[in-house]
Image (cartoon, rainbow, N blue to C red; front, side, top):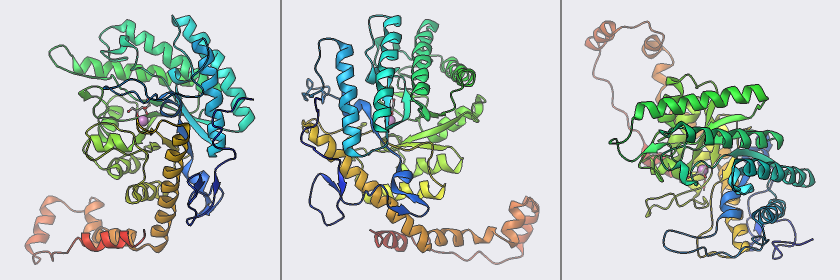
Length: 437
Ligand code: XUL
Ligand code: CO
């Protein structure tokens, strides 16, 4: 049988931190127990089909830059089949258990709606066979509601209901495929759900349309027995100037306003959080403290570039802070870490796809180990607990139990000295965090 990655002859092995073998894991050791589960169970790493097998290195200034061994075949469907076989060879050689896709990544759009559905059914059959052969599972599916020009002014938020109908066809078809493949989540990223100018936009109508669409999705999932977790992925800009799913807090407000909060969780992407002017751990925390951190798109942006560069996350501090939040909430399952990341335009070889994933899998493995040590030591968490201890009993507890009023508190202040000021100890805590790396 044809191999698409002949440079990698055996599955990537764990060789430990001293290894200099670029095709080995230094920290990611799938079966190593950390706390109460294996590393693989904690991290639930998924490969993103779009960046890894569809991405061609093209950018706004230049033509496609990669020549992929799987990009062969006389029809679009044949090319999609080769791509699928290459994908499963990659998953197996890399040793990951999950993958994620958009409908358009796995299957050609076709000349019309019925061709689209037929192609999707055909490719779902092939993916199912490949999953059965390899044991690799689907973390989530999603529909690409951005690429086709019909979505220029939105999918569900489009002023034309006929466009919403096309989006419904895609979501229904992709959700059917996700269910058939045993996918455990389904993601919505509203890439075109936003606007450029209020001169032509009724924002209220568009948000109401989006909410109605999501209610139809919830109803459909119920009737067809799709039990996967529904997820919304916030992003503040690019492609649209004003996006309705700006950040975690905005999406939570939307879900509450439109009575959708019980049906959705969030898929938080690092680079989207930073584009919103937040840190990754800020948006993760907003989601997690609301019981809504469902899954993560693991990547990172470039501090010097103001767009969504989707790079492999390597920075130890960032990934450790991420894994602290994940551990504290008891894991991500059924979500996981989808590596929504791509190699740079200049990294033209299939081998570069391995290096990208290996490096970031190692980083998250280190982040996991470091986060576990931080929790075991309990120095950082204890500092924060102690900082709020005033609310655990006495005056603070009475306030939170609703036993004090503005009047009674004012009286308390009249009868007591000025509160003692306390240092936030930021530098000491930053040093303590560094000591774990
Ligand atoms: C876009 C992005 C998407 C979603 C899935 O920035 O992150 O790839 O993850 O549609
Ligand atoms: Co993403």
